[in-house]
Length: 399
Ligand code: SF4
Ligand code: SF4
Image (cartoon, rainbow, N blue to C red; front, side):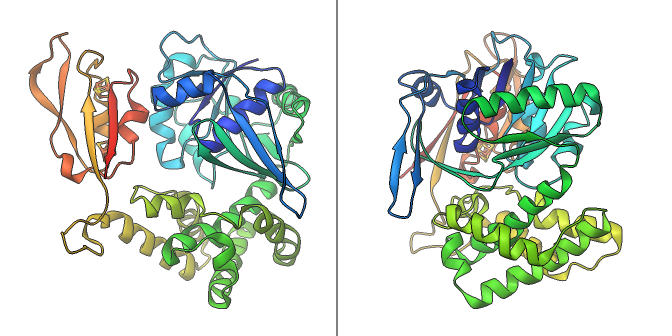
């Protein structure tokens, strides 16, 4: 099975490596050429910590096919989407050339709402969604510190339930299982997805706001009470949407296991807020509860407050806590290699800070000229370089 992974960060590249170990023909789509080179040679090394004494096991390097854009790639049997929810639309547009009529699109992203975005351009019967009970941090280019938890590490289902979907689902699960992790296709996946969503609701935005790692925040009584309030609202919203969820089961069986393996680092949304990246995944986590609660008539005051705080922060990074020099965070240099640019305009469209714009006239190759108009406003979110189909953009963080 030919599978491309869109968004080969830590989690995406780990899943890609497992799929390859299980026999799939995998291509990782990455943002930076240096990372693509590392993935190819020497390859991805996965380190996992087992046992209470921190005993570590490590794979030999797994050389992977990796590419910065889709040029030269054939249509794929499946595309696994692992970008942040806010980048899903752009990533799909950038990968249009490798998605055929029969290509299955699988999302194992955090949160909910991605299937709606995918459904705008992909047939419902080709969409698969689920969640992962795994953690991954890229501690050096190509080196992943990984953790597995739960009885099933990759659980997924399909939007349309049918024999065709089950056949493909079982085939994909078999590939994962052949790699040594546990995966299952299920026709009733929403409960699993919502329990994973509850883990994200309990820690992600909260850790970003209080600037603590999951484990540190979880040891604070007030943070825990806040998380419980958010969880109760989310469970009420899930139940109103027909998903069977049990608060006591979640608190005693799911949250402790997730905390054991992922409590040592900042959740992804906290990492984004630390790096002043926008947008974060808030609309796919607490913001989704706010939205669905409004639709179902379920009050969600705590999730709404948290969402509003995160939105306020991400809209105003440039004004926060200025130091004596007036700087609020790192600066970024944005470079466009004109010889590769084909003037598609995606970078302009998806830059959240309007850093890029179209210049009058055409470039040397006859395409629309793109200029870096507003570099000082760049927050280093990398949306432009992610979406650029020609890998023409480099964003460099300055000290
Ligand atoms: S990294 Fe790119 S998309 Fe993000 S703010 Fe800077 S120029 Fe815009
Ligand atoms: S830099 Fe990339 S995304 Fe921007 S217009 Fe050129 S080809 Fe398109």
